[in-house]
Image 1 (cartoon, rainbow, N blue to C red):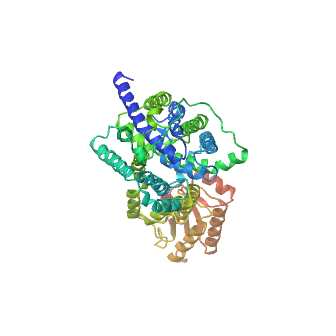
Image 2 (tube, rainbow, N blue to C red):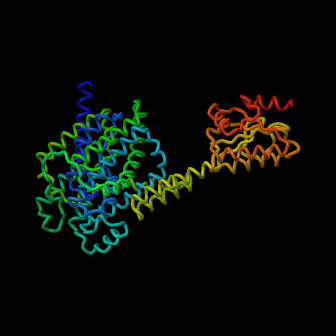
Image 3 (cartoon, one colour):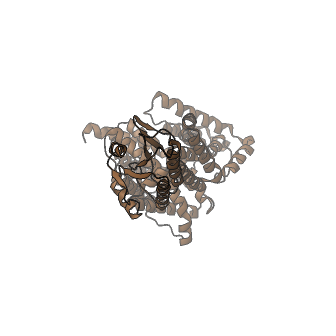
Length: 534
């Protein structure tokens, strides 16, 4: 690294520190945790992650979705802010870390692929709206039960509108104006930090706390210390579903962002190593007083724009945060809650996914519906039920696509997706089924074979060639369907032949005793030329 690069990385580290501190304080509040939990997550966990991860740029930190998941999953087990609640958050982070490590060891990162773009947009959008309601209450100076369900929080917010504090509203509007306009005027300036400093000075100078403006309050000073959550095994087991949900959302987003920046900047990433980094980072978070960390898309983008191409900014931010918790916590006590709410609201608003939903509506109504159902599920049923619903919808979508694969009759000039079309050549039909043959589409395959032969006229067809190149796998139900179709063809006095048979599929067909005496051709052209002469 050259001196010039080192200076650029160091400046990026200072920028990251300025962005991360106010956001992590806000996210800790969303999670129902003290500010130190958000700050401690920037120290040991961030260092552990940075030293292991393969991505040179992906920033790991608590984010809005993780904070909302923590709050919703722990709210029914303990009172937010209590010592028991804090212990559960530590345990949850450790379990999440163990899940990441297991996924890395057994190479299970592919599971995150089940969370498609529409599902992620809907799920995260639902969490974002839930968060925004809580932040709106802060910005208005209205007291609500931030750990309650979405409908309850909306009801509390509406009921509390007559108690709105105009000073809180003024701070919120000013903060939002600075954040939105400032980002357009000078993106490199850490406007969130500017908002915190200026709003704190205003509150202290004018005594607005005495006029009802809520402030952060005393923040415990001191470095993170090693700890271990002492809870019974039943409680450990109770936390597993929420930890799985946290891990899956982080995997889906983190691996995607890591790969995209690797491709953009021309370096290779290793998904399983990244999962290991998330695992070690989360275990470190639970063992040092932080809470679950995930990938931060916004901070990663900020570091990329700042010219950073290494993990050095995360290390510098960790050192800066350590100095803050050692010597500067007194500076945090008078930060106004409306300013924190404004910072979090501006950061979370893009996660609503309005643009993504509009795009989905234009491109495919079905996937728009999937996204909308996930949005409502995460919002009204809660994140855990929402993630289960997301997986169910993913499987339904997968089954729907697999159950209706393209079925082509190869003709002399190319292909057609109409299995009722003319034969490939007089007396011969080459039929291609473009999907693995399994229980979800076995009946479709059998029906396609019968329809292709019957539509062409049974007296005209003497040979059927099954092009098996696209059939990459077959299960017992698929094998029975193939055998049934072949038996039906034999009853029609039509011979069966295979073409372009994969070696692995050949072995499976032999296991199911489906090769028999059938001729296997290397190409469709060879099959048609040979059978046409017969």
